[in-house]
Image 1 (spheres, rainbow over the protein chains, first blue to last red):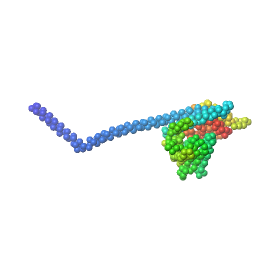
Image 2 (image 1 turned 90 degrees about the vertical axis):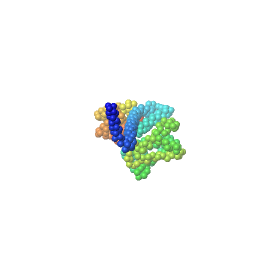
Image 3 (image 1 turned 180 degrees about the horizontal axis):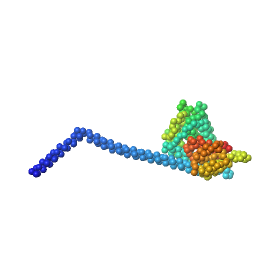
Image 4 (image 1 turned 45 degrees about the vertical axis):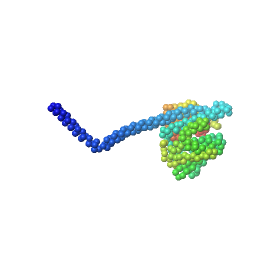
Length: 304
Length: 127
């Protein structure tokens, strides 16, 4: 009996247990999609967690890139300052020697000194370009918009580049459209940098003829500066790449001149910061015209 | 360039911490006809400006100076009536750093490296 009783108890227990289990099952049995929902929820949670991880990684990478580019800008800013001191000493003493201040110099010595002076100026230009491109990259380039005289801007550029043009036997012509207001709004320093670069380039690539700068109203909202030359022109396939940074790295003539190929890239970036656009029309063997079109009302104050 | 030897020379200050640059600027100003004094740090320049009886007609001012910045010195010059006729040529390594107030308060901003010839010609116009 004992055995039977115990068997019965076991059966009772088993029966009870069997009876309980179906009571827990109805949810699964009645809603088979619940398991699928749970599985999807789980997957969703896992994906959310991975997404959060990825976002964290991207945010950290962005921050690191920003720190890197700001560090690079800061570093270049210091290099710029530290390099300009000895560049100034070399330029000053070379000019004094060239001018005969320390005693008479022969023609050959003058030629060497002229080369030294030009090299110094090229190096200084390269440092400026590197710093500007680093500032553009780190979104750290500000425009200082104020009223300026386009006539004075033209006069400045002419004063700086008349001699290099004449040294090559080129005529440098400037024309200010009388329809243009006496003062315009913009960053005169950066505009001067843009013009210096475009006109400097025009002089470099023109062997005979002239380089002409024109400032004129484009339409009711825009004014424009055009720099036209009678130089060698730019082949169509190269036109697409001229605004790319370091685009001239493989050009041996440019390498010879010791340039970085950053000038036109920086010009385009400046123009875009000013809310304008730059276009180029060129015919090989005839010449090129670069036109910078800018709004009368510059709404953009800070870089990219 | 001809300088009238009978006229008393006008006084100019060169405030620049790089000694060789200061010497080059001073030579350019001397040749333009100025009597020039070189000062090599911001504090020395400020003390000199505070107590000078000789108002400079021209100041070549480096922006990056030890002890006291060129900005402070320029502000002082422009706030003191004694220097109302003083012309200031600001020498800077970074043209972006001088836009705005500094550009307005100075007469000319020159980006380093400064040409000796250009400085001599500019200075002679301020005689």
